[in-house]
Structures are given as C-alpha cells and as structure tokens.
Image (cartoon, rainbow, N blue to C red; front, side):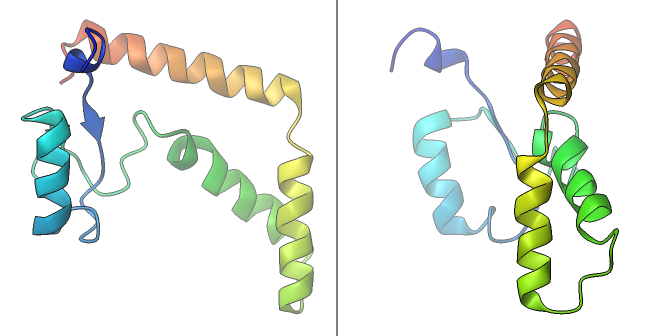
Length: 110
C-alpha cells in the first residue's frame, strides 16, 4: 500500500449486495476500518457519487423525454443521452464534485 492509499476511504451505500459478509471481508482487507457503509452512509446518498448526484437523474430525464415505445428505442435514447453530454456539463459536474470533496475534508469526512 502506498502512502496515499493508507488514507483512502471507501464510500458505498447500504445496498445489501455491497454489504454482504463476503464483500465486507474483502473490503476490510483493503480498507481496514475506512469503509463507509450502511451503518454510516444512507442508501443512494449522492454526496460523493457522480452517478447519484448527476448521471442517473440526467439519464432518466433525457431518456424518457420522448416516451420510448420499445427496448431498442430505450437503448438508443440512453446511448444518445450519454453521447450528448458536452464538455461544459462535464466541467460543471467535476467542479461540483471538487466542492463536495473539499467540504467532506473540511468536516473530517463526517
């Protein structure tokens, strides 16, 4: 483990597939007591997860805008929604993530 890794924390939500005994044993091997899981972190908490605080809501809004009628239309809508994310949006999301991380550090991870 390098110097940076010894200070790394794993954030995960309380989804049962993430917190099974087998999963937690493996995670504890790597992160020791630096795992935020269901006892410490709410399910689907968007705090530091770009997928939760941006992508899922964005995809849902854009994908269902034209009411896809079948699986092929749904897949096509998802693909186009992802490909249409522009660099300005990526910058905004990245800036938002940096702010969230700084706040987390400022609050000592709490």
